[in-house]
Length: 273
Ligand code: ADP
Image (tube, rainbow, N blue to C red; front, side, top):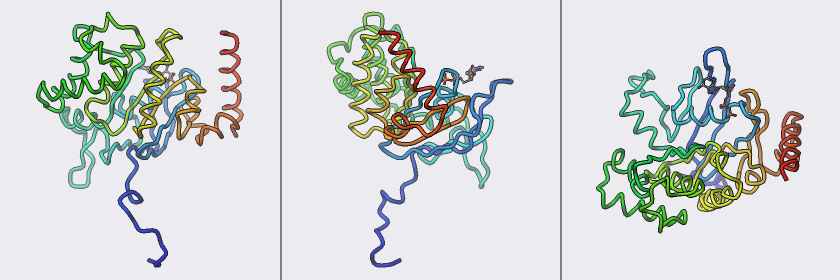
């Protein structure tokens, strides 16, 4: 090593948090992902954009093994999702190992998926108690901190039916963070919301990005993508067509398909107004 070489600190040799290698996914005859590869490092915010049906949701669901890839490998925090390594051979892992692997990711769904019969604070406590085996007192204290962070401290005792869609989604974000995941996966987190409620959820996600939370986000909110992403990935027909800094992919796309999609989504927005 030359004396002028940069020292190999823990930072410079750290593996990406997520490694996606040549992932394919078919549902029967429908091919949803065709050889998708990407690495995501700590603190990165990767925003997936692309037409409906392009494979964004499938990719996110493969990352936490809600869907099993047909081919390829996904590693999260050094673990091959869904598998354990035994004597140098990958074998499908059991449910409890998979549950532990899944805890390195927190998932936020389009339709919130909160437990209707539990209050906001109980929803946020749930994973800590069942997954991390925290005591109720510890789980409740953390849940209340997280609810405060998403601006809902005063709604801790409310049931989902008593909350707006935007508030429910903020509870869902707090719940996803409660088990201290390495990465947050957000699947069109504002698509089910009335337009006037979108901003409060995007503000929470933007704040998480500022705090350095690693995220993969599928969204149709292009200006939000431009603000918050470190990397934008344009997908179409199960392929990553173009990936790069937001100013390049959104402002100056190099692929015709990306430009066409952005023009289409732009004119659809203008027609809405
Ligand atoms: P996006 O999130 O970009 O809208 P999806 O990942 O939902 O795209 O879908 C990609 C393709 O996979 C589409 O053709 C969709 O119809 C298909 N698909 C997704 N989920 C399923 C499923 N559970 N069963 C069958 N086909 C599916």
